[in-house]
Structures are given as C-alpha cells and as structure tokens.
Image 1 (cartoon, rainbow, N blue to C red):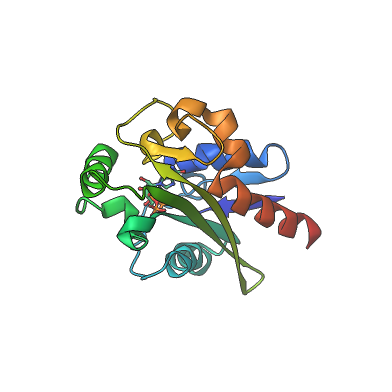
Image 2 (cartoon, protein in one colour):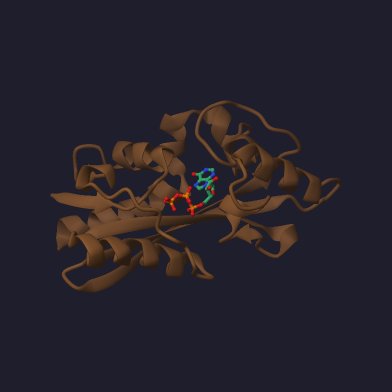
Length: 191
Ligand code: ITT
C-alpha cells in the first residue's frame, strides 16, 4: 500500500519510514512534486495535522497523512505544545528552543513533560485521527547526538538516557510517533 506523508521535516520522514518498515510504502512531498510550505494556522495539534493532510488531499489528490507533534511541559501548563517548533521565535533553530526551555525550567522541581504526536489521515474523503504520548522529564542540560528537535533534553520514564543518547532504534520502538504510527498502520492494514 502506498500513501503520502505530508511533512517538510526530513527527520520525521526517516523515523516514519523506519517505524513502518516494509508494511507501507511512504511517499514524501518531494515524491509527488509538492514543494510548498503548508502554513500551520491551527491552535491544536489535531487542527494542524488535519490542515497539513487536507492540503495535500485537496491540492494534489492523494490520500495522505500528516504528523503534528508537541512537547508538553507540566510546570509550563503544557507549553510549548503546539508552538514547539517556534518556541524561541519564528525561524529559530532547535538549539534556541532547547535553551529557552532550559531557562524557563531553571531551578524547577517539577520537570515532567510529554511528547504528543497527532497523526491525521485523509483517505476516501474521510478524516481520521491517531495519537501517541510518551511521558518523561526535561533534564538540566543537553545530552546526546541522535534524533532531532528536543531529543537531547528529553528523558523518557524508565530510562536514564535522553532520546538523543538512546539512539534511533530505541527511540523508534517506544516514541510518541511510533505509538501513533502503529495505530495508523493497524487501521490501514485493516481497511
Ligand atoms: P512538519 O513539516 O511535519 O510540520 P515540523 O518540524 O514543522 O514538520 P511540527 O510542526 O510537528 O513539525 O513541530 C514540532 C516541533 O517539535 C519540531 O520542530 C521539532 O523541533 C519538535 N519535535 C517534533 N517531533 C520531535 C521528536 O520526535 N523529538 C524531538 N523533538 C521533536
């Protein structure tokens, strides 16, 4: 089975392809000659995931899914959440985002956080949502080099290493994205 994954994030594409293995053929936006930025104007992960998948369905005619992910920090009432990619400002890089978060949590006792991924699937004229959550904590400095985004400061519960230290194989077997993706693959293989 073939389906388009609407993302401009190469790391997400790599992870999704590893998670699905041989079960689905994942086409990228480049594969369908879509080189547009899709504006994320929603105020929830669900809305943004639906905007991205719906855009490709409407403009390019492909069945499609999209992933919107946020890091939700307990002591910050769930921030940065849907704003995770621009926490330190539009066009900022992951290091800026992590520095801002470490500063916001300086001296904080409650360092609990979770990654949440929402996957929206638009297929046969219908929309479906799948989600995945992993709980953990924000450590006090960056550690590790694998993965992307906030991985160097996020330590999943039950581990004493960050996602960026655990490596791709471990991350892809327990992550928010893997949990949401397993639901999507299960749905597609059943329907
Ligand atoms: P899209 O094209 O798919 O929208 P994006 O990078 O803009 O790609 P999001 O809107 O979902 O993705 O933004 C979420 C931000 O959270 C993203 O910029 C990353 O820095 C971070 N992020 C997402 N998934 C992550 C993961 O698995 N580990 C660490 N950080 C992650």
